[in-house]
Length: 349
Image 1 (tube, rainbow, N blue to C red):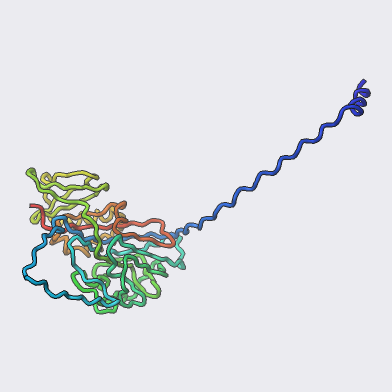
Image 2 (cartoon, rainbow, N blue to C red):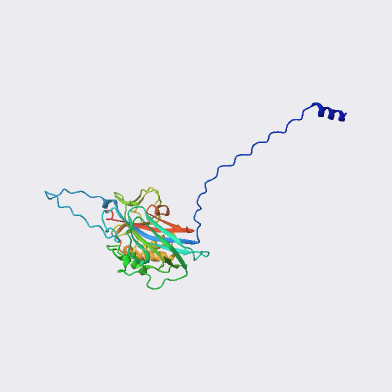
């Protein structure tokens, strides 16, 4: 029976065609290749500096009517020489960034052959001084950005004596006024440094810069009311230790929250000697090591022992880049920036 069925199927029933093959899927469009991110290196960067701001009370002025019947002859100022910086001073709202010092800390797996590019950019205004300059030469015509190329970190090495420039060196030419040439005074307060840098053939333990003409609003203020003085924080940032000098006493708060007001009348008065210890501890809380905090306190000891400011504190990390930015290639594993600020002006009465 099975033989007959097979014969009938073979003679009378057509064989179905094989199924059509589906076309292969189209290849996906090519994906644009993004440039590789810089590979980091085993080193850390620490920085400290001081930003001098003015209070809002100092930034107001009243125009006066001319006294003479005829206007005086206009005076055409001479342009500064290419290697000089704009004169210091001017509108009291302008801000000065003083001696930010940049340290490099190589880690255990740091390759000594690594060449680092470091760039500083200020948010407004212009740089005034950088150290080192190429071949220890005069200051260039500064803008808001400066780059140190070919920075090599020599771990464990000590820079030879004489690395710091003298006050009459070419790098200090044209740096007059109250700030002067900050590179020439580095040896006064610089303590132990983790290594010596070779910056394009110039030996130095640290990098240094300062800037002027920044329009940075003071983040804190003091108000005088019927119940005493009040510390006012109108920013989105919380601040740690804040010191307020009233002209004859020092007030201190350990913190002030964002958009907060703290009454100062209940704060105990502190001796100025405790300010040195407190600022040292606050600098270490920002990420500095003890030697770096010592250098910070020693550098600013004159204004800590005889205050001419009303408010002293440190910017929180998230606010520092609003004032200046540091970038490095290859990037370090961490960056710690301890930028203090003083707000100058007459104490609240």
